[in-house]
Image (cartoon, rainbow, N blue to C red; front, side, top):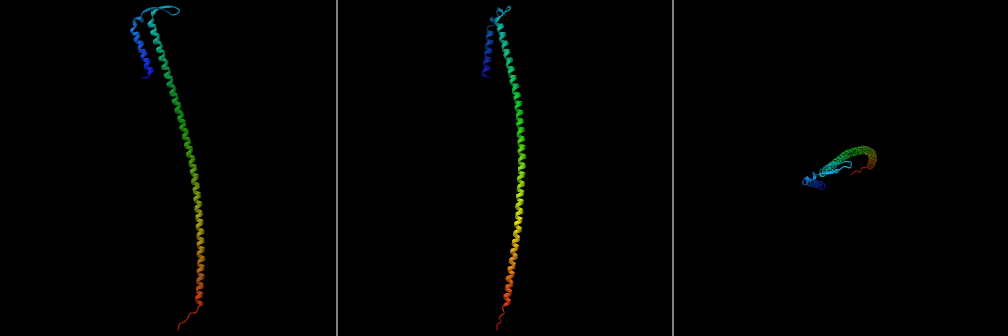
Length: 166
């Protein structure tokens, strides 16, 4: 219990105890002036009735404040929830947009990679053909040199006369 509530409860109990202890004085008849007329009534009971009316009035005011605060809190909670949902939707939209952007960029990157690997493979094929041509040309040249040397050796061997041994 809060200190304020406890204090109000103690004050209310003290007033009730004071009224109970002095009930005979509260019920004593006196002449009361209402401004336009005079009335015979117990002053204590009238004052106690006014106190009860003020307490009831303050209770109604407190209930009104509590309900208005409760309604405001609920309205604020609904607005907060709507704002949160709107922010979530915006964030989801940004994520979807980012996902789309990344997919497009990754596709472009993959296409560039495929083009680059295709170009590298074409270049390798060209280099392989060039290398084969060079090797074939070297083989032909080497074969021609070997054939020429072979011809020279054969001519050189035929040009020598065999020596006979006696």
